[in-house]
Every structure is written in C-alpha cells, then in structure tokens.
Image (tube, rainbow, N blue to C red; front, top):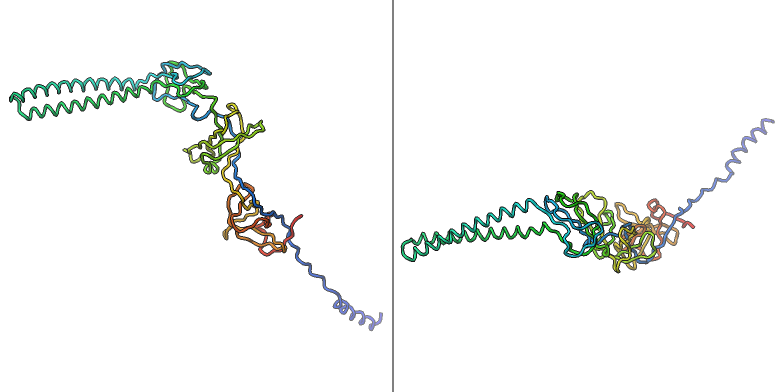
Length: 357
C-alpha cells in the first residue's frame, strides 16, 4: 500500500465513528404491584378457641375443711345421688369445741358475778330505804349491778356467735346432683387447704363451656357477649353467651378462663371437646381493606392507593377495628378504591406502577 492510500484510510476511520448512531436510553419500567379494592361490609372480630363442657359454676361444689378437723361423718359414696339438704360431711373441729367450752365457762362466771351484784344491790337498796346505808354505797351497788349485767350480755352474745359457727362443722348440699369425687373417709384428719379436697358434688344437667383465652383477648371479653359452640365432631353450632371471666391473680399467667352459658338447654354431655367462637366486636357498614395494606410509622397511619393513572399515591387514613387479616378504615378511603398490598412500604409516593394480573 502506498503512503497516500494509508493516510487516506486512517483519515476515514474517525469520520466513520463520528457518523455512527448513539445507543437509545431505555425508559424506566413501572413497578408491578398487587392491589385489593376497599369494600363496605360488616367486620367481625372473633376469638376462636377450643373448650370443654364442664359443670356450671353454680352446680359444682367441692368441700374443704373450714379448719383443721377430723371427719366424723361422710355418708356419700362416688356416684351417689344427692338431694338438697343432705349431709355431705360432719367435722369434729377441736378448736371450735375448745372455744365453746371456754365461752360456756365465761358465761357461768359472768352469771355468778351478776347474781352477786344483783343481791348486793337489793341489800343496799333496803338499807338505803331504812336510812342505814349511804347514798354513795347505794349508787356504787347500782353501778356494779349494771356493769355485771352488761358483761353477762356480752358473754352470752359471744357464746351464741360461737354456737352459730358450729354450722361450719356440718356441711349440707345446696343443690341436687351426684357425687363426682371423693378423696377422704371417716376418721381422716383434714386441713383447710385447697390441695386437700374432701368431696365434690355436681349437677350434670347444668353445664357451661370453659375456655382459656390469651390475656390480650381476655381483656376484651365482657359478660353478655355472644358466641357459638360446636362439638369437635359435630356439624351444628349452638348459641351461647359469656357468663364470666377469671379475675387474674398471677400477672404472669398467659391465659385466663372464660365461662359461657348456652342460650338453649344444653345437648352436649360433660367433658365434650368443643370449638368456640366469641364475638369480641363488630362494625356494620365498615370500609375494609387487607391489614397488610396499612402502614404505621412515625408520620402516622397510611396506605398506598393505586391510581387509575398508574401512579401510586400515599394516603393518610384513620384506622378503626382490626380483625386479623382485615382492617376497618374509619376515614380517608372510599369503597372501591384500590390499595397496594404487595410490600406497600417499599413503594414511593408518585411512583409509576402496573397492576399484576
């Protein structure tokens, strides 16, 4: 190749480069998101838990000793029928017997002192009337008699109270039922201790449902709330209402007991396992969205609304009832508006979006 041709070739290279087209800049693609439309419906917050059919709390009596005692009489045996007024257990309470003996002696002593004071008052009154005794002696006798009479009355009251307390030594049935448990026999010594029961009476015709609820839900339970009960192997719901809930003594307890009454006569036998749904709260005509669409941060509570123009917009809202996977929007959102549910916190206000199909 000649020098002229080589120079011509070199000169053409940059010209060809300058004359080429620059690569096109690729436009940003919209973020694909999943959405859910806000809808107006009833929102129900329900506590669902397993439970058991148990004797009603007013038809379940476990007897303990009122004090350290010996069992003198225990006439009922396991599964025996019980009628109102039947003697269930009779105790020999040593401390009560000793107290009665001491109070009886106190009454005898007070009676003796009163008799002497009364006799002395009669004598002083006669002497005073005859002008032999002084007025002071007569007044002293009257005061002594009044004091002795007051002491006698107080002693008799204490004895009457102690005798009334003897009813503690005999415990009778307050309802009809059957013996469901027996832990002692006659002549056993028993203690006034929850770990030392003597006999248990239940009425199997009166039952309730017992459930254990987490403390967070227990705080929202109040008597009268409605519920449904279904046997684990059953297909029919039975209506019930909350009767009572446990008063927590141990602050570290993870659960607390709730008792429910059946609205209609119970058909499920004792110890039947059941599933229970307690209606804790409800909102009629509530605007509802999936809970995952609601974001809370230091700026407040908000959702990302998917606009018809393909733009995501942050919207401040006021949250209402939260029921598991659904949340009520009390203000800030209308029925039919679409909210982003796929990681809405990662979407920027004003970002272009595309709805996933």
